[in-house]
Length: 529
Image 1 (spheres, helix red, strand yellow):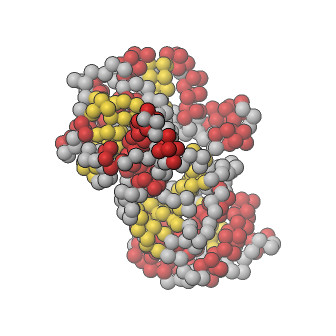
Image 2: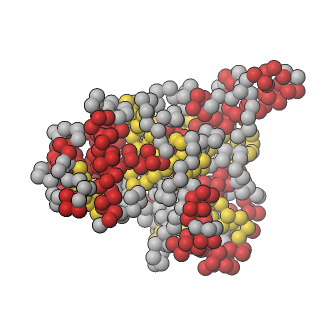
Image 3: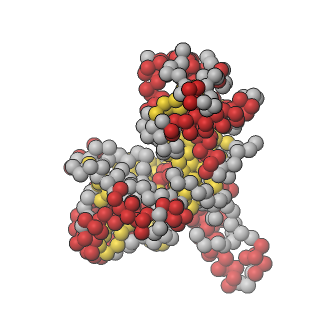
C-alpha cells in the first residue's frame, strides 16, 4: 500500500462504505464463502458454496480430486469459477446490495497454481456482464485442467532438484524462508514444465489460487496491488480489488493481534502462528512476510500429532467421553508428579521423529537404561495429563526456537476444534505462563480479508487527501500526519474482538520452565531410537 496522510475519514466515507470478501479457505477446502460488511464491520450478508454437494458434477471429495498417481491431488479450475457465480447469487439473495461495495478482499488456500491460456487471458480481459462467469471462463481458458493444490505431494523429485540447483537446503531457507516442500507451488510448476511441456509452453500466465480469484474480479491477471473493478453482479466501477492472500495470513489479519500474541490452532494437525521482528533460521517451518506490518515476519509451524492423538487417548482412557477426559485431566496437579510423555504417533516435523517416550520422575538422560522410560503410566489421569502437557511443552520449545519472545505481556489466542475445551486451555495457559483468549468471531480468514479491504479503502483515501493537500500547498498537513497502523485502525471498529478464558496459575513458571528443558532431553533420546 502507498503511504499517505490522515484525513477526516468519517466525512470521506460516511454512510456508504461496505466491504466484500470472497474466500477459498485452506482449512475448509470443501467450500467457498463470501461476506459483506458495513462501514462499521458489521455483517450485512453471508453465503457459502459447498463443492461436493453444490457442484456434484466435478466429483470432488472434500473439495478435491485424487489421481491414480501417488500423492497427486487436483481441482478443475472451472469448479471455482462456477462457485463464484453461485456464491454471489446467494449473497444477493441474502440481501446484499453489491453496488454499494467500495472494496473487495479475499484469501485462498496457501498453495496451488493455475495456468492461463492465451485465449483465457483474452477472455478475462473482455468479460461480458450479461453472461455467467463460468460460461466464459471455461476449460479453454486454461492449459492445465487438473490444477495441483496444497494437498498435492507428488513433487518430491522436483524439490530435491530445486534445492540442489541453488546450492542446497540452507540456501533455499535463506532465500524463501522455508525449505522446499512437496505441496509448494514452485515444485508444482516445475513438474508441469517437465511432464507437460506442451501445456507449459502454451501457458500465457500462471496464477496462485488467491491471485486467480482476484483476477476474476479485476478482469485481468491480478498484480500484487489493488485496481478498479466492475462485474455482472452490479459492482461499482470505482470499487477497488485488494491483493488477495493465502488463508493463513488472512486468518492472522482477521485476528487483529498485537505483536506479543501467539496463535495456537488446535485441529487435526495443530499449528502455531506468531509475529516475528526477525527472520529465524530453522530448517522446518515457514517464515512469511507479515500481511499487515511492514518489515515484520510471520512464523508458521504445523504439528502433525494434534487432535488425532488427543482423540485416541479420549477413546482409550475415557471411553470417548470428553467430560470424563477433562475430569481426569483436572484431577492431576500441574507437573503431573514428574511424569512426562512425548507422543509422536506420526512422524513429527520438529523434531523429525516418530515414536513414544514416557518418563517418570525417576527417569533421565544420565544413562541409557533410565532414558528408556516406561511402557505405561499407572493411571489414566496420569496418561492424559502427560499427553496434554507434553504437547504444549513441545509447542513452547518450538515457538522459542523460532524466535518468539515470551514475557509479561504475552497472550495466547486459541482457535480450532479443541479451543472450546477449557481444561486443555488451562494447561496451555499454565505451560506458557500466559493468559489464553478466544475470538468472539469465528472465520478469521474470512473476516481478515474484509478487514484488509476496509484498510485499503482507508489508505486509498489518504492518497487522495495527500494529493489535494499538495495541490493546495498544504505542506504542513502532509508532513505532520500519517496513517494509522492496521491494528490501530481496525480495532476502532472491533475493540472487544478477543475474550479471555484462562489465566496462568501463580506457580506455573517454576513448574514448567524446568520441564521445557526436560522435554528437550526426551526429544533427543527419542531421535536416537
